[in-house]
Length: 149
Image (cartoon, rainbow, N blue to C red):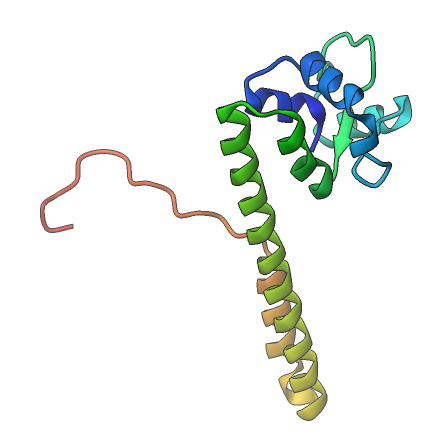
């Protein structure tokens, strides 16, 4: 996560967050956070297709890993920071469990494909496409709802 996004979640300015981290630099080794360089920032801008993202900057933003975000709880101690940290950690756990389940399904599918002959190849290919398709949450209904619905 980028320092600008984390700061917004914590309800502080990005410079305040970065100051707190710099005061505690020994708690944030290179695998906990790093500062983006110009090329990485430009690549990020092109990935999200917004040319003016971030406005003018004096310094490049920092990127925090999961461990870096966990360490922020020892640096930023407001009630909001604690609650945000808990929510972020829970989100990381959910993402990891989803990825692990997805990998397990992929492995089981490969085992089944090896076990059965080519006649089921179309079925296995269709299942793979479904696994790779982005899931969308159901859209809420708009308009008047009849009592029998």
